[in-house]
Length: 73
Image (tube, rainbow, N blue to C red; front, side, top):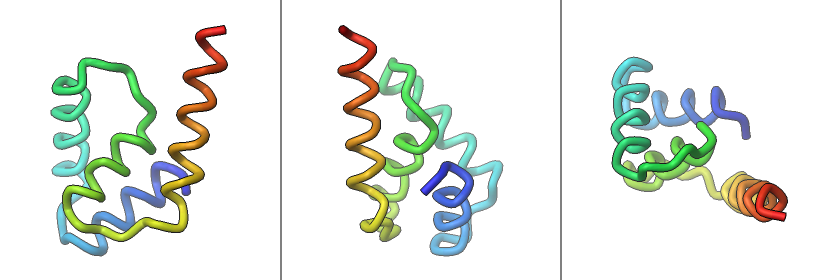
């Protein structure tokens, strides 16, 4: 699931606006103090808001971990 699909799913399930989600994303990035992909930030937000994205979660996390390991070698 790409970031736009995550964003739309959060909007549909919570009623938050795109601007509200973007603001929350920026707050998360500041709090985490790391550069992380939009998909992962949105996944964290979805989890906190109880938005179900289970089908794509494992793939997204696996891809993020793989990229992190790949970039360190």
